[in-house]
Length: 85
Image (cartoon, rainbow, N blue to C red; front, side):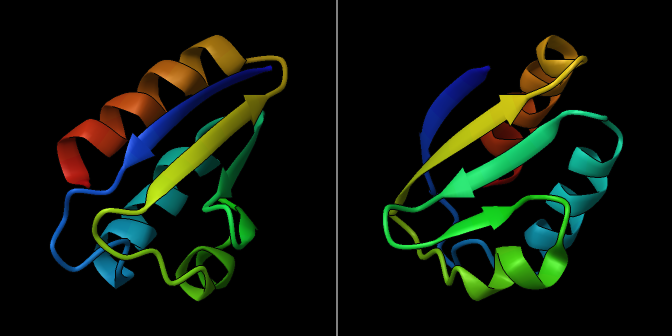
């Protein structure tokens, strides 16, 4: 299991466009990718679950990745967060 924390920088938070892109990125991997905002948790492969979290700018999200390809998934998801959120 690997995890990292990220504070959302995007002024609109984790809204529809980046949520959709995140789901597509997470779906490339077999590993389970979970987001935890401290208030809600969501499967990063489910668009409605990610959007229902309502993550705003400045909120710290813990991303947990667990599975057979977790190393590759960790690198890709962490890069996604830095470039898109």
